[in-house]
Amino acid sequence: MKILYNKNDLNEALNDVSVLGFVPTMGGLHNGHLSLIKKAKLYKCKILVSIFVNSKQFSKKDDFKNYPRNLKNDIKKLKKLRVNYLYLPAYKDIYDFKPKNKIFIDNFSKQLCGKFRKGHFKGVLNVVNRFLEIIKPKFIYFGFKDFQQLTLINLHILKRKINTKVIKCKTIRDINGVACSTRNFNLNTKQLKIASKV
Ligand code: PAF
Image (cartoon, rainbow, N blue to C red; front, side, top):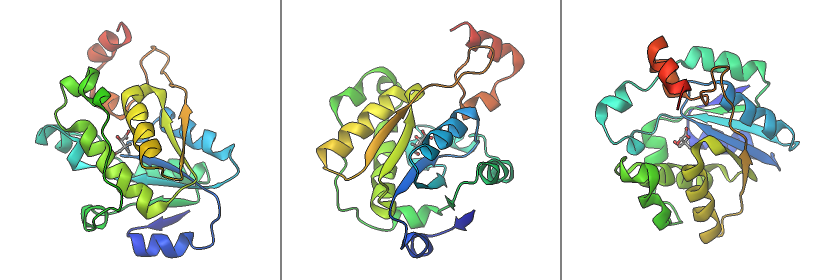
């Protein structure tokens, strides 16, 4: 697995790749992420995973600070799955240019999670729009677990006529029924038990 720390090295590495599948993540990889990668493998493409904890999509500073991170473990998991490329950009690499496409935020962003997480979807669309311009993947993979995110990204891609297809993937659950999520690493046993009843 080639690890790339900036877009210049990334572009050079991807120069002769014709079909690329992209799995964007914020790390803290769990079975949900791994199933996105396994799905990507069915598309007979080279696979690129990104790990970038995007501060712009967090409404609270503490939430960003406490977001679970475990890069060493993540790299082990990605190598085991024979992922081709891992993109680990710094903040500047993502935000030091003006994207060609303006982000399109459908009004659906104001409902559900959007009511409680100020600026969250704008932050998600901003970073995904930039990733799409840097990476230009043929496919991008998202789970139904984040249904509102998946829908808004798909609408942005369609509206801006971006040449990337969104592949929608099923939700993966732990045995207690809770949907796999990096944030679960911050829950104690009692909290997980409560979550399993939701
Ligand atoms: O779903 C996530 O982990 C993030 O929202 C994403 C799509 C990687 C953008 O930072």
